[in-house]
Length: 150
Image 1: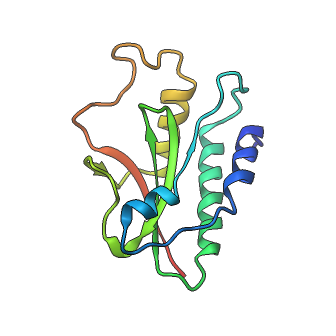
Image 2: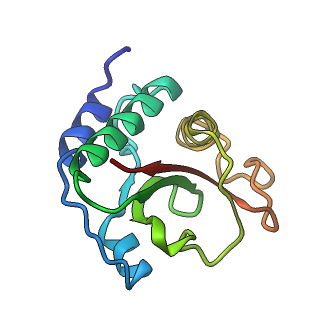
């Protein structure tokens, strides 16, 4: 896997973050566990789709290790197009849902999310131009979801 200084830096920041578990309050849990990433405009364009998939996979593995003797949790990530960020979080699986106020498509693949973030947004010189992005205001938000349990 080619190394990315940006992704290596992000991994060192987020890998060991404490996981908040609050089965009574999905919003608290989601907000406490959320991370957002976007490269600085002057950062080198060293992030590939494969590199981003690898980064997210490493974060999931770290969270999995942290959940020893804990209830199952849902790891989920998505592209926040308005903020131009990759975001991910965790909520208890007992909630039975994700904490979005819009329709979601939880069948999105990790690669599809990474591709959308990297090539559809971060390194797309046409991003923000009228009709340049492929998001439809009435469509469901693509979200990658994985069950983390012991």
